[in-house]
Amino acid sequence: MFAGPFDSSIIKRAKEKGIVDISLVNIRDFATDAYKTVDDHPYGGGVGMILRVDIVDKAIKSVKTSDVRSKIILLDPQGAPYTQKKARELSTFDHLIFICGHYEGVDERIRSLVDEEISIGDYVLTGGEIPAMVMVDSVVRLLAGTLTKPHATVDESFSQPLLEYPQYTRPEIYKDMKVPDVLVSGNHKEIEKWKNEQSQKRTRTRRPDLLQ
Image 1 (spheres, rainbow, N blue to C red):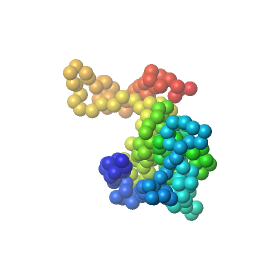
Image 2 (cartoon, one colour; image 1 turned 60 degrees about the horizontal axis):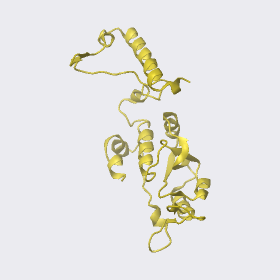
Image 3 (spheres, rainbow, N blue to C red; image 1 turned 180 degrees about the vertical axis):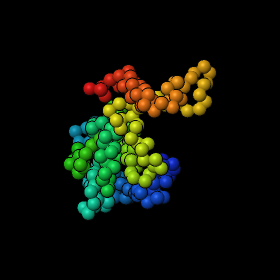
Image 4 (cartoon, rainbow, N blue to C red; image 1 turned 90 degrees about the vertical axis):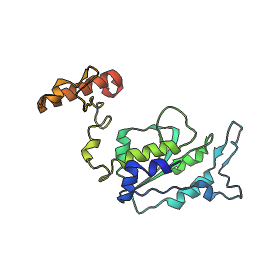
């Protein structure tokens, strides 16, 4: 699952430059039986299977290190909502360990092994693999040297209190839709004023909660 996203585009270039190193850990390697079992039926009954705490604990210990600034994160629908602010915070760490939940859920004791629980949205996925890809992508692009134009991450939506303003490129006119005159005027002061006004307008219309 991770091969496509991690072996292409920006993340691939970051790996080639030595900016980031990504290791995939298969928790089945830490199973104790011939079937490589990592889950079991929940105590008290219930539908589905639960990820075992002993297996996950061994997997964490295999990669955990105390000589760098690190954080262990459980990807779980019950976690705190993921934001651009959190992505920037995580980009300051030397080592991140993402635990991908699966099946019906995780043994509650696994939560005691992690530093933080994060959710990428109020919906349920098959597992935490896709959320892990989302978070890795959002963090890696913030690392110094990843993007050729570092300033590109500054004006984006959620990097500032407001959503990003509308953007245009050639052709200047397409099917009676014209680029706003101010953007082709060359008046940089007016252009910046327009961008700010548009950001406020777009935020007020689409995400009024951000203005609070």
